[in-house]
Length: 238
Image 1 (cartoon, rainbow, N blue to C red):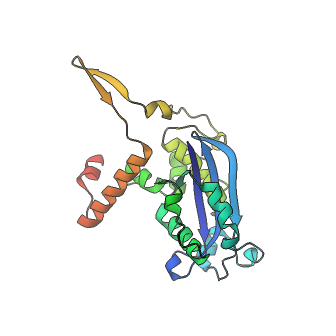
Image 2: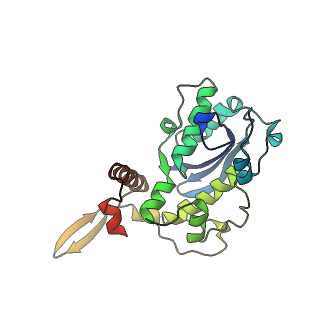
Image 3: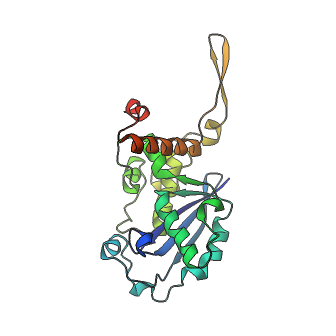
């Protein structure tokens, strides 16, 4: 199973108002282990960067003057992520920006979602920790992932942190940079059917996959929005 943990940095918050991607960072997981294989690029957005955004990532337009346009790296980027499940925190934000970049590059037929299944770790975190803060920094603290180097946001740095958080959050291998040994479950075993005995009757238990949990959480988000209140399932969790 090949997965790509992906993050972006941008000139601002809304691609529909002309904001652009200025950095893409990707970290490869194979069978839930970090391979050390990454893909990273800074990009020239050909527009100004909002000061609020620059305060977050520390990247100025002067830093990007000699960087490639998105159109120059689009094929290479697609080749790296093709066929993999994408792991993204707050996926609609990054996907909206990247799909817009493909449109601006004259590649209207290309969208991120069909390139591979997308798992939104923000939705997964909300499912696992309802009512709590689920930003990347909050998750790093919750799962003892060392983010002390994160004075500023950076696409590749954040993708590496998210890879560690995702593996810890889903009971997988802990990365070496955690700084401590964590007892973690064998995820591959957890996803297999288990047989339980109850009153002389054998019951087969199928555990939900990460994708199914994320889809369940997304459905609850729709219910919450439609009802303007927390769904009964989430109230029972709390």
